[in-house]
Image (cartoon, rainbow, N blue to C red):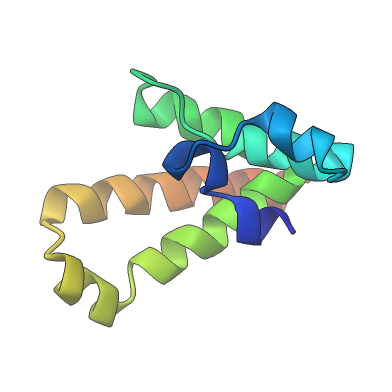
Length: 100
């Protein structure tokens, strides 16, 4: 569920409270919270927060892998700076995954 909802709070008017009100399990809401980047939050801080939640960490790993397929990179016109950022984030997340 968290994977499907991972961008909902960031990209829509839905709030974490809305998810709670609609009966989503607390663990799912916590993971979505960890996957929601705050305004003005530096990307490394966001990744550190996401990696602290097991569900969020696994969803973010899958999200980065999906966002960096050759087809997606080509379609989005991602530059090397973004690919480097994703690579560093993936390393942080997979390091945390191997320690859990």
